[in-house]
Amino acid sequence: MVKEEIQTIVEAVVRDLGLDAGTPVLIEAPRDRKNGDFSTNIALLLAKRAGRPPQELAREIAARLSERTDLHATVALAGPGFINFKLQEGSAGRALAGLLRRGMQPGCSETGAGLKMQIEFVSANPTGPLNVVSARAAAYGNTMSRMLRAAGFDCATEFYVNDAGRQVELLGGSVKARYVELHGGAEPVPEGGYQGDYVRDLAARVPEAQAQDWLAQPQEACWRGFGAFAVERVLESQKADLAKFGVVFDRWFRESELHRDGRVLGALSALDASGQVYLHEGAKHFRTTKWGDDKDRVVVRSDGTPTYFLADAAYHRDKHARGYARVIDVWGPDHHGHIPRMQAVARALGYPEDWLEVVIIQWVKLIESGRAVKMSKRAGQLVTLADLIAEVDPDVTKYFFLMRHQSSHLDFDLGLALQTTDENPVYYVKYAHARICAVITKAAAEGLRFVAPGEAGPKPEEAPLDRLVQPEEIELVKMLCDFPGFVARAAVAREPHRLTGFCEDTARAFHRFYHEHRILQEDRALAAARLALCHATRRVLAHALELMSITAPESM
Image (tube, rainbow, N blue to C red):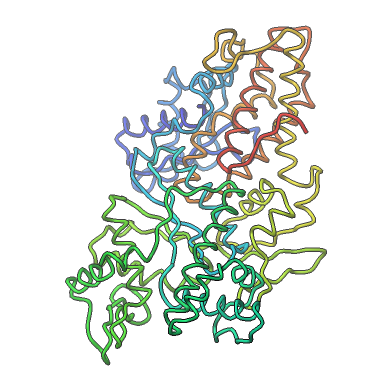
């Protein structure tokens, strides 16, 4: 696969020379393409440790590389110790044929080695509709899980439902107040309750017989009844909205399960056994400061009730018990302070230092006609996921959420999202795929076609791919052949936003190739080679979009 093959060969030469094989070998495109197709700075990285001048070390490595018959590239030195590679004529075709034979799916990567892991994301409280930050988390987590699986990890997805505690009682009290109001009475929403219009909708759905039964009970039981009813309806709505968004979880895990079967108290016993739990002013505290928290945290209040923190500890202990070698929690921007205390739990329970990873998804600002659309669940001014995908195509929404690194604030431009021009990056990428499909259809009408993988007939990898020698062809081939490795690297870095850049770069490279070179022509051998390149590009683009659960249209 060109880049990875060069990297493997350089690593082998470094080992043969007895140098530090633990230093990563980076193969990158040089700033000036006149210097070659790829470059490595490995001699610069190893020089100090080897006690030799970088240029001298580079000459020795280059000499060994030049002896390799499987390199398919010429080697040259540049600057203070860079080693440049220029692909030999026909090497792009050989690499493309190999990629086509192996298939376009990036799942052939063995990076993950089947490591069992879990990614938990969204996990919004079941007290209202999903907002746009939750939607961004959904796009991130869903794509991240697909990339991890493609990179060879055994990755499960999970939504944690906080269906226990004060927030559910307040939701119940809010729904009760609206129910009374709908039936001619007057009752204020409890302090700290929920004000959105969706609360009235929930109240309108309460069966009268059930409502009368709950209203006849003491306040705590009454609120619990209304709250349990509302939670189930909210969860139904959240699941439906996520499904429309292309996100389906392997499991919805309820906090109430942990309380019901004693796992919360089991977590308390485990933390107590670590020697880091102590009694202060009638409450039990866990010594999180030992692992960098700014203060110790209460796990059991003075009235004997467990805190949310203890329930979270029980949940993560349960994750470990299920055999996950590594877990990723995707949290909203207001949960940053929770990281050190959860890391403290993991360390106190004896889990590896890298067992728990936390990714923070930053705020989203919706821009409409130059003005920000504000969000506030409690104030009732809520912009929901359902609202957004009713206005903007879900594919476009997901792509826009993924265009920036998750740690960056995102201004979601509704005007740009609704455009159907090249200025909209989603449209640009989808148009490239549709254009390729049109070329393939036209070629078939002219008697030139390849069969799909697994079918009998002429296959694209059997085309004379050594005819692909033009700069635009080689550049496109290099990008396509790097796709499996690219996905693995982005997955390991936890950066699915790289996919959008890859899609746009690939679409741009294809359009350059398309405009510079005639694909269907009298030279049937060259036409077959270029058509094979179109097939490869289409498959890679389709799979890249699929990782983001975005459709790849055949026409536009």
